[in-house]
View 1: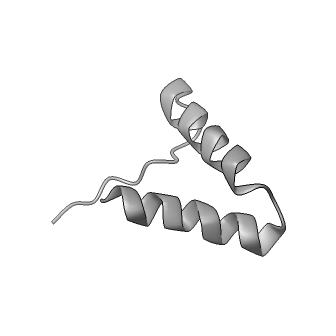
View 2: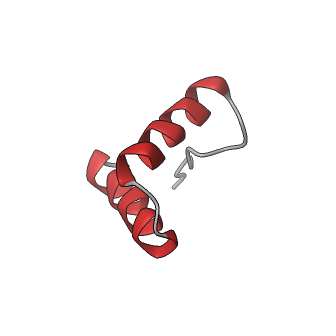
View 3: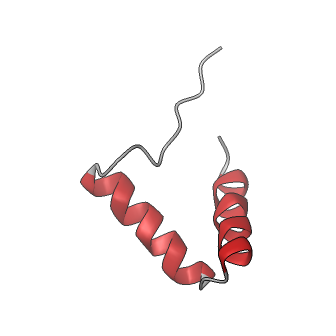
Length: 45
């Protein structure tokens, strides 16, 4: 998965819910690092 796809999803979610895109991206990265839920989707063949 490319960086563009991940950041595009964050931008779309921020636009849809009226949130700050920068804050959402930081939250996404923090959740991925700390292991809350599963924000990173593993793509299989």
